Length: 226
Image 1 (cartoon, rainbow, N blue to C red):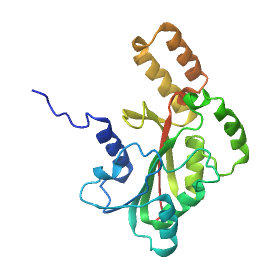
Image 2 (image 1 turned 90 degrees about the horizontal axis):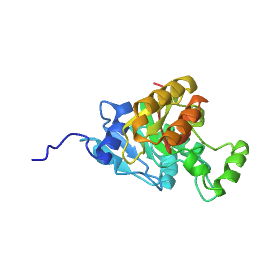
Image 3 (image 1 turned 90 degrees about the vertical axis):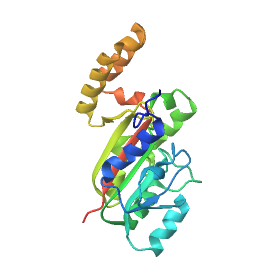
């Protein structure tokens, strides 16, 4: 007989991840899914009211509706390097902050702009080089925390998702020293799952403080001041 273990599937763990900074569950959630939301995170919010809108509708609501949401979820809504056809990261975060009730939380995930998997594509190199001149670029956890604070939020936190957002098993810290210790410890515990060459390549990358580059997504949250 199969035992129905809780959080055995990736989607239920992703939904749990989104509930971590919002416990107890908010009564009013505004869900703004992006192009790659990773799953229906809104289905894991229990009995609270869930309102789902597009990013464009989010901007419109920020000018017409009062601040009354306990949480705004942005799954895959922000982009590391938004194109001219996409909405600006700063505008989206400012609108989300405007719609939050005091002590409400913005929570979301997005692609990691410095992930090695992205950099394996030469087409991404030019964009990464140009990011230094793009004020709205969010390439990693440090930049997303800065963007959240510029939007008027505080206690911003950014993490690396392990291993992937569609089936998360944990969050890795973004602080350079804490991240270095975390990824070196993680490599020691999983050394038997890789070949010698692969293990020492990852060890060398983690040793110099770039262990987060193996993670393809980042997770973030921040609160609105009371």
